[in-house]
Length: 349
Image (cartoon, rainbow, N blue to C red; front, side, top):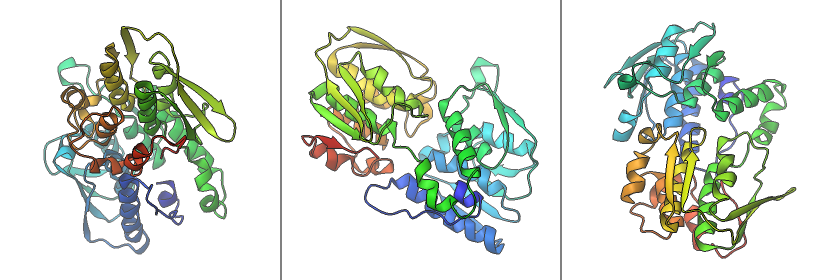
């Protein structure tokens, strides 16, 4: 996103371990860069399937491409993933965005124009009415920050801090070095590591998760603390990564977890507790019904509903999985790595 917004060449995207969502966003940006560069004003339709990140980031990006008309749409599930707060915020800046279906949800038609640059405020709840509340996604805030809008928010999400940090780092680089050094800003994904924590908690053993760092800005780095009472110890090895191993710790019969800052960890933790016979009480799960699936329901049913994180959580627990293909959305090599789980080195995406 930053490369596209700065007019820099996009980094290469290739290899078996590149997530489908990244490929989709990359291809979409290549198309939109041509529109921005050459002033092509034809009506574009871009299918984002069930990639919520791309929908949120590109909605803001397309709103800035003056003279363009872009329709962003996706699969049926995308039509049930809220985007109203972001659209409302963009409209206050002068964006021309129309809903092509249900109000507050994709698909969207976006007519690009010059936006105002004044700061805006986005609250955790769009409405004080508890019957009509829409939780703020941190990606709504990140989408606006990426296009240069300062956002004041009461959302404590570490991913907002991470976005600000990466923008600051990227902006500090000169145009000659931005492309060559951009990869240095990227971290390995702690949310993908969650399923290896689950695997160790349920099956024992020791794994090295390469290139993960304990000082990560990611909220999902909390996985180390969440799995500690579930019998998984985490140690950092400098210049290598995190070693996770099973312990003989007496596991609790009841566990309370707060997923407010790390909702993507819920499937791995919930299924681990279920398999270990631990009663799990949760807070901070309000966003889960609006993910790739209703994750509260999917975990309870042991059905993926084409949700990559549900599929990985089921497979890590040796439970039947009705859709392995959806895993490529975020972690294409997971299935093969799981088949080779006896190896001592595992590299999450």
